[in-house]
Image (cartoon, rainbow, N blue to C red; front, side, top):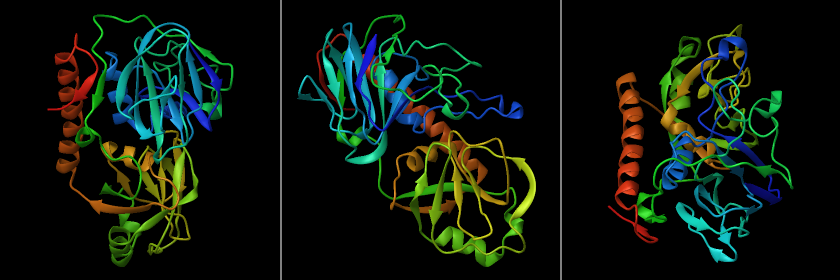
Length: 324
């Protein structure tokens, strides 16, 4: 059991989400930075998709009611365990009664707190993820609040040793980013100049961003006609362009349909970069092929597999830096 002693800005229980229900109007939800979430899980010996706590900008203060192996990954929120610093991508033994405190994020937006055994909230439609807009999943279907007590699941197998990842092994979290995209499905509704602008211009993250989507601001993207279309499906990563020519990138909690033309879609491995961006970070887009996108997904999976092997090889030792 872990207890939220002081709530931060927005904390929810998240795993890899619930794909397969968009035809019924249910968004995928899940972690905004699936790489950081998976890494935190691997550091404590969980399946990469186990339920974690996603922290946003300010992580709050937590108490461990029982001794447990825990980990944090993602944005650096200056975590401390009973006053001692905790690395932003590391695992550690939390004694019963110890307190983990976070400050505001130094860089990035979202961090993940994993505990060995995972957060044991009910499974809804195959996932423990929170979709707060509909009150589905997670802890009572809502954002976590001060006083909430989250149950921890039973751990399987032997625990890995506590590890601190070396700085060179930590992926970027926060600041500007270049996102790889596949053009379509309505790229033919934009002028050649509009597509060139989209791929060459820089777009600032506006304050209008959340788990549903990011409104960006930059050079207007020229269209061949109206921006409105007959409502059709949306997925996380889809880039809608309303009449004003300013792109909106859909995120994990994206609605299932939309009525604006879509110029492109951000590939899955790069959505974490968007989820770690904040106003006024600069976002750029670069076009890739489908074959390159497939290789990027494979590279993401291979990276997590390498991390799992390295953590497993360090089991039984003491806390130490993780290096290749």
